[in-house]
Length: 157
Image (cartoon, rainbow, N blue to C red):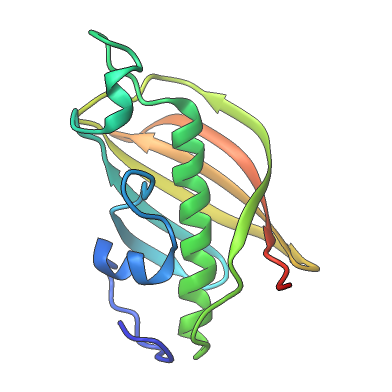
């Protein structure tokens, strides 16, 4: 995948994701994009391993992925939806979006090493310079987290 191209081949791998998002280790929380309907929805994956740095303190002897990082993984997935959609339309990039609001966050089960997160994100609507997304995360087909995200485009100064 290169800039200014409409050709996106699934799956989108982590090297390509790094061309689309500014996040880097230890804060890049999406490993792969496996499905996309431009300007509508995206499905991404995150493989959770014991090597994640947050497991050292959350919690020693009982590693659990922090819920806020699951929300961040869903937000990064929303960012990938906007970035890939822009490229598929022939634009080199979409504006960088920042997480502005999280509503109705629910955590239904702990996420532990060995789990594979499947983030499903749907664009509800775009208005002004903001996007509203519905997101949920599944492990082995069971919903472990869900929320509604509002993201705002960064204003250039």
